[in-house]
Structure formats: C-alpha cells, structure tokens
Length: 211
Image (cartoon, rainbow, N blue to C red; front, top):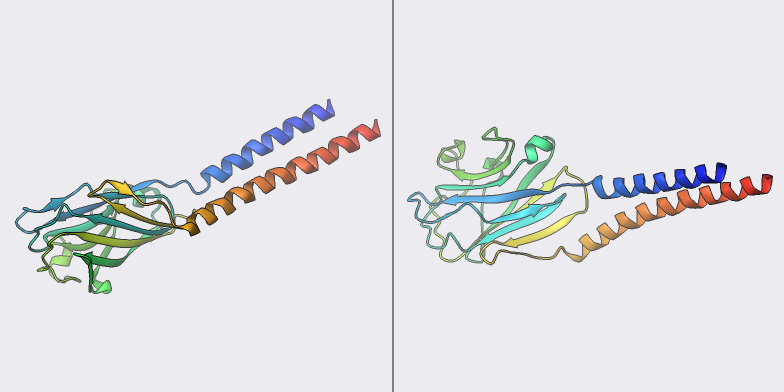
C-alpha cells in the first residue's frame, strides 16, 4: 500500500510541475497596427503580430503605400492592459520605405488610452493629445512600406524577437536565443520532475527493505 501511495504521489507531482512549466508564462495577445492618413485614402487596421511574452516585436505593412501623411498611427496590444496592467510596451523604431525616421520618445503616449483594456502605443493621432504635441513628423509620406518595432516588458516568459510581415501575412520564426530560452525552461521543469521521481524511488526502496 505504501508503494502505491508513493507512485501516486510521484504521478501527481509530475503532472503539477509539467502544468506549471507550460502555463507559468502563458501569454498570447494580438498587437495590431491602426493607420490612416488624414484623407483616409491609405489605411491598415489588420496587420498584426502575436505577443507571447517579453521581447521585441515588429509589424511591417505595405497596405499603407501612397499615404501622404499620418492621420492615425497607433499600435494596440489587445487585452494586455486588462490582463496585465503592470506590463508595458515601448516604441523602438519606425521605418518608412526601408529607412528609419526619427521621433521624440518623450512625446509618445502609452497605456489604456481608450479604456478598452488594450495597451496602446499612440505615435500620432489626430483625435488624441499627440495631435497638439506630436513626437513624429506627421507630414511624412509613405511610398511603399511602414515598419514599427516595439518592446514588451512585464509579461514574463521566453524573450521573443518576432517580426510580422503583414502584407505577406507571415510571421518570422523566433531568433535562436528564443529557442535557447524555451529549451532551458523545459529542461528545468524536466529536471524537477526527474528529481521528484528519484526521491520517491529511493523512498520506495527503503520501504521495501524495512519489510
């Protein structure tokens, strides 16, 4: 009976540890671009990338080619503020037609600006405070492509470095560092399980010897 109880305990511990390894850093949020020029001729509200943990992400789109300026230019990480109010995102760079443009980081607005539970990076918006005090040249035209890169912190999990090419609707594979981090997390969980089983096995052997 004692041996059966030990085996049952080992099984329960293994399941618990493996479940924690999978769910401890569970995060899956869609970060979408919101873009329109002032004439609403060039728009993109669909290009996106999946945010799965702390790390750097990019959204690239050709859907806004032909825009003559910025009317609305934001990134919304849907549901992240509602689930993780302490998590943040920071704008890293803006590239237009393959070249990086400058911006004043102190004038970019962040947070649940629309009070919908989404975390917004407000780069320029003719309907927000960034209209009166913009951190980017609003009169910038786009000939072919727009790429926005940002870094998410406070979610935990494996560090990501992900780029989404919205025009082609593809997502690049995580960088090699990601695989290393994920593998390390999995190996740690496996090591814990093995340790628990080894201790339980030793206890079972000791129990038999006493008999």
